[in-house]
Image 1 (cartoon, protein in one colour):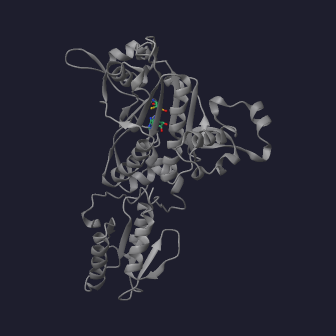
Image 2 (cartoon, rainbow, N blue to C red; image 1 turned 120 degrees about the horizontal axis):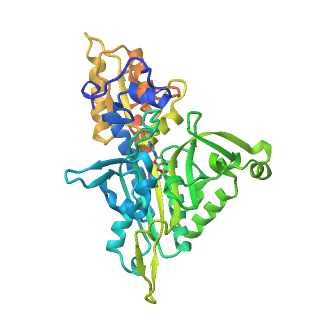
Image 3 (tube, protein in one colour; image 1 turned 90 degrees about the horizontal axis):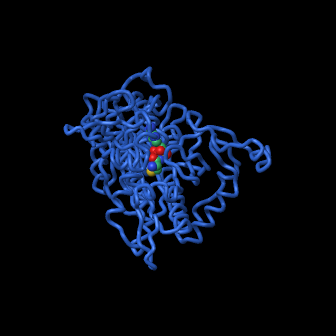
Length: 442
Ligand code: 5CA
């Protein structure tokens, strides 16, 4: 892609309404544009990054055997009345009437709708367990939408739902998700820690929030520092391996504010290991048994003819929130570096272009074509801005690798730079191999 053709409305200054760095950066680099309070359009740069995050989330769901479907954003109020949540959900739910006066709503979550789909399709124990998910827009009329995509009204979420015959089986589904979440966040370049959490309007008595540390986070957390040293790499998707991993996390105290108990914290964690800080909730998993299946009469026949209400859990990832969360984690000293897995481009070519001398342009174009031929997603800054202005711009856009074509460039060696590292003079062949090697298999 040529930068001159890219739809990327950059701003010169930080917009005054943006209070945290992710919101500032997203507006400055033209990733999003506010359409009304708490509602955003995703412009090409932001959308591309979000789609990459979405795909990693999807791949890790598929790996544990979850099946993707797509439910609508608009739901009928009826099923919410059946579950009893229509009134409980309060003002956060956006209620709508269609032309027949039928009560509808813009889904803030999908426990009712998926239960309705399940109860009308599955009748026998033989079809269980099931793990279903979708990635869809949600709407919550938040009282105080703030921090850009971190707490907004309309947001993109992956929500999964598990269906099992017993509590014991359901815990296995829960642990599988626990495992998938750790892998997902790792691939996104984040260290997300599972923390025992309150269940709020979703309900149930078992729940973990996955939290990344950030001063601007809205969740207060209390943890044993050693939980950050757990290495998930030695674990695979076998049941025993997943259980062992779950146990490792359970060994260390880690809770959010609403589960905090000072005496327990002080008795379980010695002072030196105590961490009290703030974080961003990027995912949340719940187990709630028959909380929805019972009122919605979602049961299956067992072998002996008896009926059992299916045992359910739900599992959310804030896909659009993650875009902001990654920025909070990776944008430091005014320099952004996207993890390679989600970066909007693999590499950017930054030539110094003079009006009367086409040579740098031609060199840059040649490299551009060569990299493209190897399917490397490359951005070519073909604008006539001064090099220093270009560098400033790419400090914010955050593409992790740069090829710089300036006065130091010879005919066969180019400056190759990883953001925050020293530049090296390398041939295009070596640069190409370096970039291709970065594409690690998952
Ligand atoms: N039904 C359950 C699990 S599928 C559920 O809705 N859980 S949740 O309420 O915790 O939301 C899941 C994730 O969505 C959160 O962990 C968070 O990352 C994201 N999220 C929730 N509310 C917002 C919001 N207002 N703006 C942006 N992201 C949000």
